[in-house]
Image (cartoon, rainbow, N blue to C red; front, top):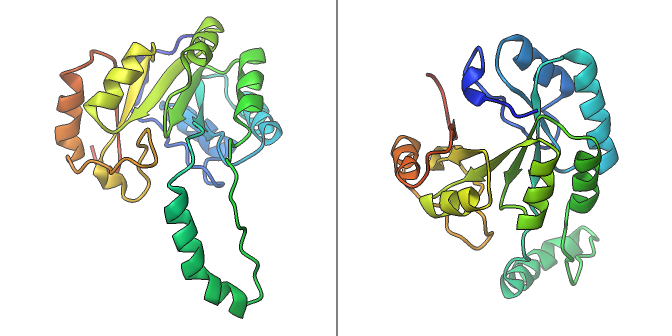
Length: 216
């Protein structure tokens, strides 16, 4: 099931956009055009992800990908509490009760991984971090090609050490949506066209350029 990115008829990969835009129909259309279609597995249940995977399989016999958000550690509790206090007057004005504590959101991570191990997909990509070594090994064992989103050469080294097959290099042109591996990290400012060769210096893995692309 290993996918060779350099064998795509058109060297374009559809960005897996969580929240609805990355439909099975869009993934299949990108495949028909010669690229690699992608589903956004994040921000939905494992069951909803499974339903979209089934829809893609009915629409195309070419490889496709699924993206997951890696659960991160909670942010700065003090900063969250301070933000809550800033919001409180407006919340009270509109009769909204703010939560006094926000628990970790794992985005159904364990259930999604279990599903993808039991019923593998051709490509699985990760954003906002990396899986554990055990998780990466399990995905590798079922033959899925793994892609890690990275924003710095340091993150690229970590992804390579974990055995990723390719890297999605995301530059600052991506705007506020940056795939740093830790929520507390300040996103780098090195432009994408400079970040790509900086990452290439530390790894020979295939690189996918991402972030604010407007042309070839």
